[in-house]
Length: 489
Ligand code: NAD
Image (cartoon, rainbow, N blue to C red; front, side, top):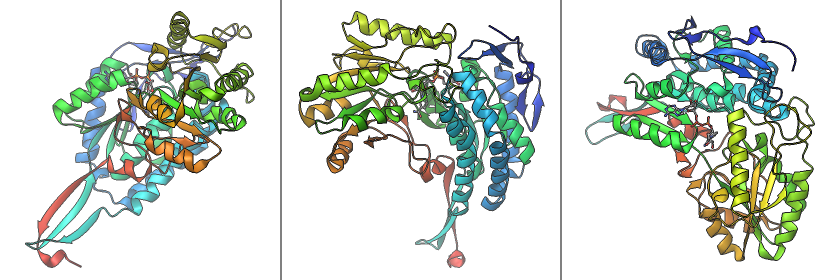
């Protein structure tokens, strides 16, 4: 192991009210490179008092500052400057996130380098085209129907796509005229402060965006804070249940983007070359540290062994290594704790009698870093633990089925409903099957996120949708002002 601590990446203060503020507590997080375990930098961890200061700043910026009363055009102008400042930092941000959580660099360039600026541009344009006021004729006169900002937003994000998932909240919130407190995950401790650097350069007014890195306890303080009007949460279903319960108690608005255990249905007419090529987007994207990972492969009994062999062969050939190398397909897990969790699930599958056909341990080629071999288990029943619980790592299972009805039944036999895919030579048949799967997103012969369309989960995968125009509505409240007919055009 080489090189001591890199101090230029240290983030020892929080971004509150347009400036850098010292923490009230003394806890910090040492960030390590997921591939080399070398120190990347240190970041202060916030307390409930730091969260309170950030919420106070967001409240003032909304209630007293101009942001809550700006026009859509004024907000769009600032958002475009913010986008430009982020785009200029795109390459450095992509590299940083790859080192933090192991994301292959090409994917990181798209999700951490380009997407945040793209989302700001998309919502800036969208809000300019959205009617935020409309006059309707009423029985007594006229009603002015307004869409107002929902208020102060508490955004809580996970570590797997830290930049995109944060910006999927920040961009529509800014467009709507909300102010924000972002609480990122300690596992990706450093990259979210790039938003602060860019916001300062872009001249985002003080208090409109505040960032406090913190753990769960301070996260709970953000959820419970009476000054917060809405929580936008992405993370595990376990945390989502706790957060949703508190928001329900307070009648606080909440969107919850949670876990998944999605299915990939291979129909008997599928081209297996198309299927294995599509695994990069459907099942192995970001080392399978993706909420929509299609980890349950459902294979027709008539071609079962053929599917198992194609999948195993493809998986054994995947290139594992340092994700900064553009030829690497599978990088490390984001933390030692997460690696142990994934290895634990491999043991569970073994003990439950699943047949290991690829991977199954740590790669011999890597002597440091939190690597795990991409792994495939065949002969898994849909009732087995490995088929029911989210692993969040590259561990796929194969389960046989007889006929389309059983394939759909197995796909739907899950507490989750987030992603999915259907593989077939007959695209119409694929779309018909996709219609029957209870899931928020599903692809036919490919799986790729569309920023312009709603994204989110059914069942225990969440409540509400992000992306597309649907997400803007999450940050707007309706108000009807009853007035005289003088309002009518
Ligand atoms: P996590 O739930 O442990 O943590 C997510 C965030 O919530 C972190 O910032 C954490 O500090 C915070 N948090 C945890 N408990 C909290 C509480 N009680 N109150 C307030 N804040 C709390 O999840 P993770 O391990 O960081 O991320 C992985 C999970 O996220 C997986 O389940 C994955 O499927 C899910 N995810 C979902 C989506 C989606 O869009 N549906 C996208 C990405 C990840």
